[in-house]
Image (cartoon, rainbow, N blue to C red; front, top):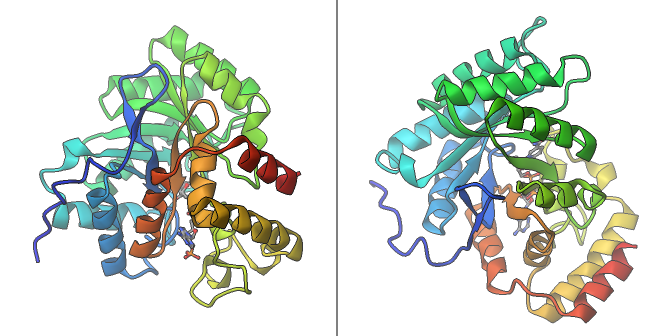
Length: 330
Ligand code: NDP
């Protein structure tokens, strides 16, 4: 049946301004790193994107290498756009990235202008788009001069292939250098995509201060620690979980360690006392941090997206809740 988006879709989510830019991002965004590749069920992917859009999630995050196989998430996203979203492109913020290994030889990896420009052209073809809203350099390159990588981002914007640019996985020191270079080149830096969750707080050590000071936003990826910060692993590793899937190597049995699960159990109690699920509490917790404009979630089921968006119904914490969480995480 033809899809018509929910007419109340802009009523349940907050849209936060990304730094000093004109761009607003939904407080919760959906990433296609896992569960959108060639090995996953297409109709489930389609249902998840539809549901996300119905709930007001306007931002979809991809990368050249998302799959497996690499590139297949962008191809599946194209099929979904063509089937269900013709006419809705201007209501969406689509991002992609390049920086990890994508094709063999010296031009398919890291941060050269040669790689970034070619990779974005390939991503646009795979997604069937004329431009992306945000293009990121996916990880710092220790060899290519930062000036060249930033010049590639500046060029891509001037070519009209991306409206905004950002970086991902850069430390605070290199982020500041990148911001300065882009400023000189005339293309503003608006966003850093950084890992951030209750179990991974490195951004609090200078990065978010810097972004706030320089008028840029932070989108927090893996805010649920790939599912660890949910009730999913409280009683072992379920069969339908990321940790159990053989073709995914980002989370495995040893990550679900007794130490982590003990913390998760305690956090789960705090969430329950707040009247939220642990996933919901973990999401609003990352949104408290300065400069963080969006929590970039993943999902394998429609019901997870529904549960996660409901997190925004209770965004505030009492001082005592914050103290309890700090004690558990210490
Ligand atoms: P999350 O931490 O949100 O983990 C998502 C997983 O958690 C889901 O696949 C699901 O696991 C589980 N989950 C989600 N909601 C619930 C719920 N309510 N109850 C129970 N389980 C739940 O993020 P991801 O690791 O998926 O990453 C999110 C996005 O971040 C990526 O898609 C990508 O866009 C971006 N990213 C960027 C990186 C970068 O280098 N810039 C690196 C990694 C990610 P299950 O599948 O087991 O059901």
